[in-house]
Length: 344
View 1 (tube, rainbow, N blue to C red):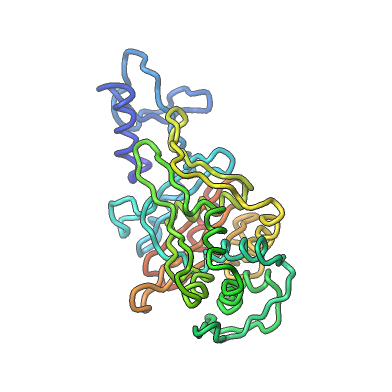
View 2 (cartoon, rainbow, N blue to C red):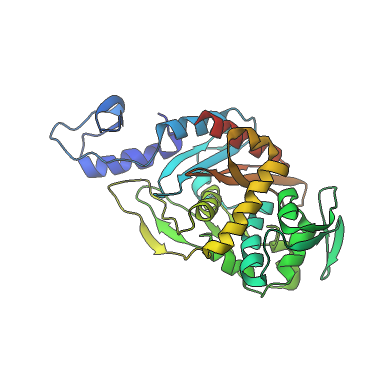
C-alpha cells in the first residue's frame, strides 16, 4: 500500500461508493487501470472514485520520512487545486494520523504569519530596516537568538536568518489580534470536512498578554499548527488564494469555516522573505532542490529541553510541511524536504 496512513480512508470511501466490491488501482492519465493495488474491482461498472494522491509524491514523501530515524511526518498539497498529494509519516511517529491532525507549536515557521502582519498592518516591506540584537528585553520578556546577532539589518535578512528578537519586537507593535488576523488569512483557523479523514489545521487566538504576544511572534506562545496546516499556510502564500484541501475528485470537501488570503502585494513581499531563507538563510540545505521558498522552525515545548523541527514551503505548484518531533533542530527537516523534492 503506497499510502499506509490513508488506507482506511481510501478503503472506507471506496466501499461506501461501490458497495461490497472495491479496489484501489493505479491508473494512467487517461484513467486506464495499470495495477490493482488491493481489493477486487466491482463487476457492475460502478463509477470509480478518484483520490487526489499523487503516487510519485506519496512514494517520495514516504521514502523521505522512512529514511529519518526519529518521528517524522510530511504533507504535500497542490497549490492550484488543493489536492492532497501526499501524507506520510514513519513508524517512529506511530499509527495515528498526526500529520493531518496533530497540533504542535510551529516555532519560527509561524514567522510567515508574523511577516504577513508586519507588512499588511505595520507597513513594512522586505527591505525595511529592523534591529536584530542577540538578546533583547521586549516588554518584560528576555528574548534570545540561537547564538547570533545581526544588529541593524532589514526584514528579509532577519527572516532568512530567523531572528527571534526582531520578530518579538514586530509582534509587540501589532494590535492584540494582529497575529490572529494574519493566521486567519493563511488558513490556520479554517476548518474543513474531508470525506474519510479528520483534520486540524491549527489554533491561533488573540494573545492574552503582551508577553504572550511577543512569544507568539516567533511561534512559541500558545500558537499551534499541524503539518497539514503548515502546508496550507505555504500553499496560500504560493497561490495567493484560499486553498480548499481535497482528498477526492468525486466527493467534495465541505468548507465549515473558510478564509480570505492576504492581499497580493503583501504576499509578494513574503515570497521574497521565504526565497531568501533558502538562498542565504536557515534553509540553505534545500538550495539544490530547485527554486524552493520556505521557513524553518524550532519549537521548544514542555520544560524546554526538547523541540520540534519544522520546514514549511513550496516549489512550483507543490506546497509542503515537514514536522520532526523531538529533533531539537530544524536542519534535519530542511534536509528531509530537499530529499522529497529532489525525488519528485
